[in-house]
Length: 288
Image (cartoon, rainbow, N blue to C red):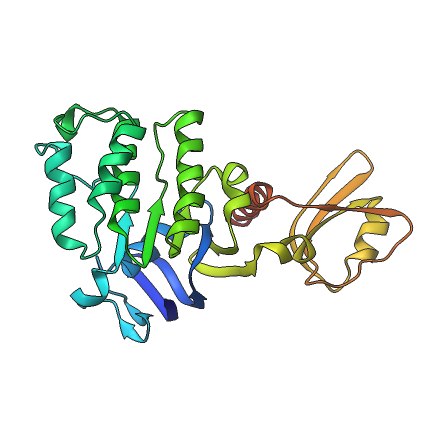
């Protein structure tokens, strides 16, 4: 399954949510689709799921535009952060309704996961806690058996044990029934080991697309005396820079280049920290 975004833009009245986003991803694979709040992640995922149209550009799955293409969309399951189910329906009714939409729906898996998450199929959606609604979304995503399965902040309200259950199920499903999973989450440190490929959106633009094993070579923290750091990072693109006392820390795109100096130290940057630095960069830019 191949997803291609070609110069995708989306605007809402006075806001440009996405601007010329272009990339290609191919599954089966687990994709980390990341960015700070307002980066455009959910907007893009809504476009991919065919829920709205682009302002410019197109999103194609296996060469076909997803918008208004029911035969393509039946192979895409989008579990949004909220609003996935009708309040007056029971859990059983909700799962039954989804089974009609997804041709490869796995009813046995749905029943099994109801027990795993201790969800009563007779309960109405409106009676569920946030965690149980999230569990219902997770069950739907896995049981849909779609070639592209999207989870956007899938475990709001779930405790650590519930989130770990989700991670274990994700690994299990990818082993038993490989597909293209796209996971957008703010709990990046928890989930980062799952990602095989990482895409980061920043202010509506694609900032980075990398295989996870190349991440550490791409983004580097450089520490030392200000003069030494400035000299070492000369010519590299800056993400974030800060000074404390007489030490400077610079986060840069190294792109695999060797950063050589006797008076500096180099460190790795976690995905979670990367998003924090990007958020700080955005705030600094908006305050100028």
